[in-house]
Every structure is written in structure tokens, then in C-alpha cells.
Amino acid sequence: MSGALCKRWSALGCLIVLVMSTAMVREARAQTEDDLYKKAAQEGIVNFYGTLAQINAEKILPVFEKRYPGVKVSQLDVTSDQLVTRATTEARAGNS
Image (cartoon, rainbow, N blue to C red; front, side, top):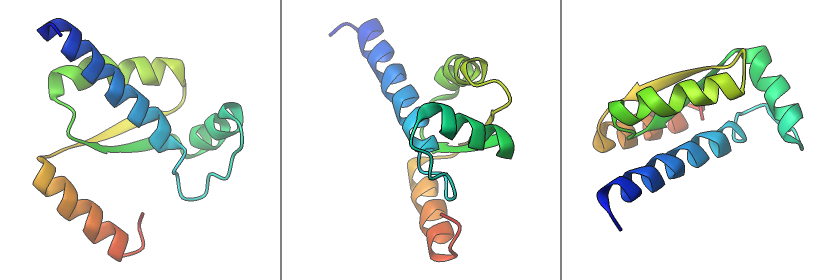
């Protein structure tokens, strides 16, 4: 694959993960995308934990926010090691 195509697939993969991760919101037991969106809009923010390069985040996250008005994405911009530590710590504390 060409470099541009790899970047596009990488960005698409990150977007898919971001959208799917909204389904894992603790209290969101929604069955449809519309139900899930309503619950996310009530909270107003989606925390995104990932190793998405900043240049890609600047392109992808605004598209998500445009697609889902009223839902802001808060990106945790850390290394993969820091991400694992953070996720493990929060899971142990019951914040997952």
C-alpha cells in the first residue's frame, strides 16, 4: 500500500474505534445509534483514549463532533505506555 493509503486506512480505523468506543460508555445501554447519541449528547463529552497522532486527531475528531453535534471529544494525548497505565489505573478504581 502507498503511504497515503496507509494513512487513510489508519485514520479510518481510528475513527471506527472512536465511534465504537462511544458504545462502551458506562451507563449507555442504548440499542440504536440514535439512542446512543442522545445519551452521549446528555453527557456532552466523550473521552477518547488512544494513540492517535495529533495531525490525525486534528482531522478526525472535528468530523466526529460535526457528525454528532453537542458531543465534544476530549482526547487524552499520551504515549501507548502512559495510556496503558492510565487505563489500568482507572479500571482498578472503577472508572472504566
